[in-house]
Length: 588
Image: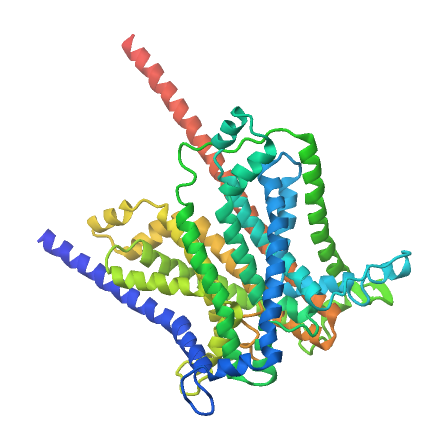
């Protein structure tokens, strides 16, 4: 009787699991596969003859003004990659391999560009090196010299993209430099190998995969970015701005789809290379490896401290310039400080509503996105049955990693704006903005969730099944509490990135649902640069507040757990002492 009841319970769990897998796969198809299919359809089907072929691509490459954008984009991306990787490598090396002071401060400053839209970098450069910039005018004539870098064009775009990609490159290279086996350096020193030779023969080869991965990440990010070229690009066209002009300016959806297809190519290449590199990197740091030991060197630490101070100073200067300009009455004629620009009275006619729209959108994205992504990761990682369905779900979860945000937005237009689509009601609503953000940042959070789930003991689910416990109860009572640090980290990641992204939303917002990042673009177009700077500062402050609150909460929980562990150890020690004394007394 008991065995029959147990078999029936197993059947219920299995049925629920397969239903959830089917539902989740269907949702992934609706939000990823179907929109991409419509993008491909627009690109490969001639809108006039309805024939399938490459006529749209031929038209694109035969139009000099359009095809030249590819060369411009490649030029920008290559220069950005070289400069960003070199700067980030030296910075990461200083953090990981030297004894310089103020490392936490340097790290926090290096991460600042992650908390702002890329348009803010361009706005900051405008106030520093634009036609009325501080350095261009010699601090408004206070200095006997000026410094003009011809900002509007490739120079401005490259500088903006370097600022944008530098934190990403720094993070990847920091991880690579942190896992080098110190035994190789000890052997080299025993053999009398010099420091320079060690660097070229040990350090660089040991981090080569990290460098390659960083190069592809920087190239892809700069290749697909929309914000920086929009602000400081001038007449220098790139692919991302071409999409905007074709779709918004000329309503030429087919050409927009063609450019979107071209933008996917480097992202797919980057994804493939990253997968190959991840497999080759496994096992490079084993249990026998030893952690790198930092040795004192005053000369090295002095020069690298100077370098990190210079890089950090440039980043801080950019943000200070934006903050100062957002409070100046009329730049550069009336430098009286006020908060009038933060009221957004006449800024593109939107007021503060875009800011609150972004906060609301980011909040929903963080809550709903974290719940959906973590549950999908749980179903693919912890459910041991229905392997084909789980593999399909994992494959679908990886697709967004190869999709630029602007391509996701374009694909959503083609799919959700179809009149005969039952989901057409979502278009121009908060729902589609939230969905676009979830899809845009899906893969990174999915990988974070699966990493956290892999660290849990696999026998917990087996034990729950053997005790006839529903997998829902195991999920909510065991898995979620144990993965709470990863879950809260995912929520912060989704919130911050939803606040700063513009590429995935620039085609999707409704008239009354304009996000703050899109409002910055519109303000800059309308000449309301001070208001755009103010909106950028609001986004920065909110993101820093969310990130700071998260880190403070984590520190508080860690401190509480540490105190609790200490109390438990004291109690255990006291009990052991009592047991020993009792044992002695009894013996006597």
